[in-house]
Amino acid sequence: MDNCPACERRFEGINDFPIVYITSVSIIKPQDVPKAVPNWYHEDMLEKETEGWNRKIVPSQVLNFFKRSPDKDELVHSEFVYTRPWEDQKENRGLPAKALNRPKFWHKSFNFAPFIKKLMTENTSVKQYFSTLDELVGHEVQTLRVIPSWQYYSHHQVYTIPDSGAGLMLQLSESKEKPSDNRVTELHIHCQGPNAGRAGGASTHELLKIGEIQYEGRIRK
Image 1 (cartoon, rainbow, N blue to C red):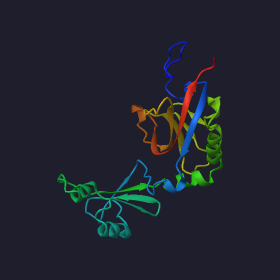
Image 2: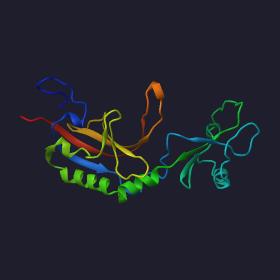
Image 3: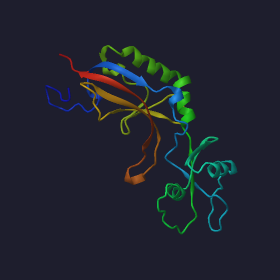
Image 4: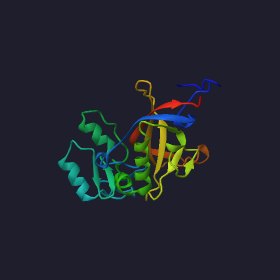
């Protein structure tokens, strides 16, 4: 069912249905969370001190790893994800790299992977929510039972995850893929995104898809 039979309004997502039948719920296992889940923001770093450029220097352990591993472009070290300069990545792939009038920048981003794993293994609110979803499989329920009871921000359409330790949020977004007659709502972890000021204000940034809910949307007869 894609449209309301009474008013023909299109059902855009799971929130538009008063009742849903939950066909299946799948959540990734903590061990399947990638080792690197970098933040959108990265710090530019240099391989060595360069006159005229006030940047931090990449740790020697990181540089040594990349020298030993020319096929690797990314490394998790301490709490961060380090990325090889884009120009070097292209060169290692045999692609032409544009000449620069500046030094090559390495990138350093905060790694959210440990926080996401901790959410899934230790966060009481998250574990309880996932447990509730599992219990709803095979049942017709009011849609409100499928939605987290956490604080909701309608502008970004995200739910603030209690005690996440990193300002993490959960978003339920409708998938474009539609297996058989079921609809699919995807579960995504978000963090704070860039603030565009007058051009759009604060935003959120998608970090990782952690699961999905397959359901059949229904209405009261």
